[in-house]
Amino acid sequence: MGLKLLCVIAHPDDECFAFGGALALAADAGVLVHIVCLTSGQAGSYRGGAQSAEELGALRRAEFADSCAVLGVPHHEVWDYQDGQLEFAAFSAVAARLVAKIRALKPNVVLTFAADGALNTHADHTMVSAFTCAAYHWAASPKRFPDAGPLYHADRLFLQTSSYFIEGRPAPMPAPWTVTLDIRSVMQRKHEAFCRHTTQAPLVEQTAAMFAEFGHDEHYLLAAARDPQPARQTASLFDGLEP
Ligand SMILES: [Zn+2]
Image (cartoon, rainbow, N blue to C red):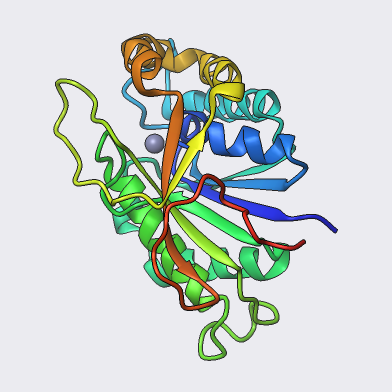
């Protein structure tokens, strides 16, 4: 059995916009990659002609599946939370679902946003970070959700961060990084995956110059691990991990 990665996101397009390089590199290396997306993105500003939230959600679910195929990620699911409202979701219930997912899937690496909300400081991204950080630790805790499957200690938790900002937008306060991933070998696929989000075409256009200038690497913070260790700079999410 090989290495496994679980990535938890808020919206269809997060998987490519924020994590595309890491996910494509992991898939290419034979890692089993699984993405959980908490909403269908039904409240998106760009609506691609959709007449209702339901219609937009359905379009974006399909775009997400197409994007995952481009990235090489066969395992993905969209949950049923309301886009733009994750701060009002029942914290413990969402965390419990993620705990059950972690205990069932048994990933080596869990990947999500940092608390800043990423480049666009979206509150949903901050909430996904909070849910997933709690679930990472609670999956290993005998005191939490004893009915949600046998305890599981995932090896590493990484949070997505950035070395640059989007021009003209309020800047996040990004976490420092411990991982710099050189994603040049999969940059084109990351872009193609983003382009599969046809309802979000204006966003792809707006960010094209930014990604051309800065998009050759992605940055992550090692936020938790099974063994005590000093922070150090690495070039992989998986170095030293055995399947
Ligand atoms: Zn998002």
